[in-house]
Length: 442
Ligand SMILES: C[S@@+](CC[C@H](N)C(=O)[O-])C[C@H]1O[C@@H](n2cnc3c(N)ncnc32)[C@H](O)[C@@H]1O
Image 1 (cartoon, rainbow, N blue to C red):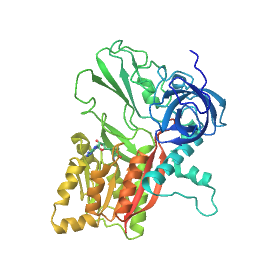
Image 2 (cartoon, helix red, strand yellow):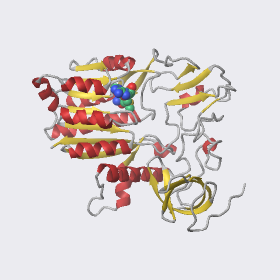
Image 3 (tube, rainbow, N blue to C red):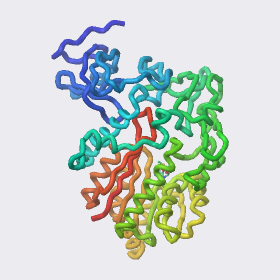
Image 4 (cartoon, rainbow, N blue to C red):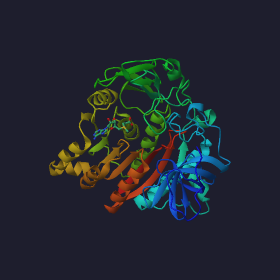
């Protein structure tokens, strides 16, 4: 199909082809350009490139969306896609999702993630992340998002210990969703997955009656395939516990429950939280006997990290909505006499704590809160509750930079100082990354 070129000054129309100088990157991993003063979000391009793009959405006055059809001047960081089935040369309807940065050099992916974090912090958090004196900004950005051990050697492949595939209800074909829709794409490999998953992945099979296929390859257990049957509400793997090893420490985790997907991510986040707490201890800001909390605690990974820094006298309560995960947390924290794991929604639990008697409130205000919410972030209500609770320190693990930045703004306005910010590239070849932010009450 041929599309007319849009001369400069004309209003943008869906289907029109335009030439764009790509200048930046936005939240969600999409590149940014301008056309006649209007922002254009352009997919499959790399900042610095000149591309030809087809307009896909022009409803809004302030911005349009487009998809790259031809790279006119390629970035030196453009690479052959790491996964043929997800190649940007394929139509988004025909390409596998989950590897939208796979055509970009790995170190440039991290720089782009650093730019997204810096931009989110500036625009939504009111925090300007600047290079230190004498340091080049590009170098400072390069250090902001840390690589997971081993990824540079493997070009960021083979890292996933969890993969979810879907089944086409009509044909029974198994595969990932397409890049921008819920169409099932048949693939013959999963290069981001680890060897255990590659061994058991039912690629090419037909699985009528099944809706989801969760592949789990734990670090210290046999790989599992968990089938979610169409029309059934029970979560596959809810009763099957697997062993994970973080450094030399064992964790029991429900096979179908939450666990970080990158093989190195549990150890990276465990170490980062442990080190953040060690710094607080060194500064005399951490009270092991206070009302310390591990919110959105899952199987207790981060409560265990706090304990490693604070020692066996630590008092900490881990709060998690899924009962099975709480059972695992109770088991994983059983050596810690002062640790409790409770099944509750964080907002409801905090509302109860806010009703506590003065001595309990006092213990909580001397405490440290670790929180690791799902992608949507802690959100306004929980952040407001935390501010009322007023703990001495907040150690915030976030997988959405904009959600983190918004909560940062609220916390800073309430008198918390952002004292440390680290990013981790635990989702190579995707736009996702994890951030650890430490806030101290003034
Ligand atoms: C990103 S995971 C973190 C888990 C754990 N901290 C870890 O590192 O393995 C978020 C957890 O929050 C739980 N969760 C989600 N919404 C919740 C809520 N409103 N209250 C309590 N837990 C919640 C999920 O079940 C999940 O286990």
